[in-house]
Image (cartoon, rainbow, N blue to C red):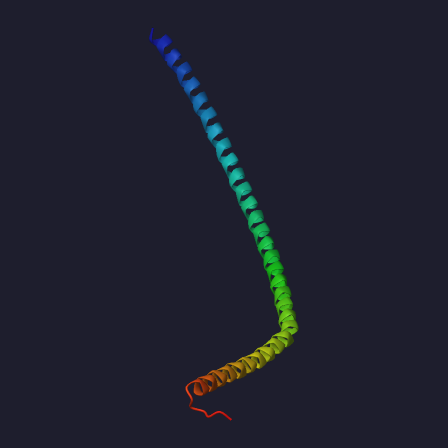
Length: 124
């Protein structure tokens, strides 16, 4: 009976060793797959980083061009409007002078009317 137990144990041991070998092979395959995935992730990450840099550079260039264009447009508008603003300013100054003159004339007329009404000024 001991011979049979030993042979059964030997068979069981062989099966266990076979399974361990299979597991070691699977673990080795998983390590290789993991290394491949890591290298692929690294490659994709580098590619994305490069793409992001290119997009940032392109956007920066576009933003600079738009800023330069807007600055030029603003300068042209300022140059175009400056004479008109000066003309409006001169007209406003003239209008203020006329308005003051009219107010002074009205005050003098009202004071003259009161003076005549109260007899401060004689009749001609």
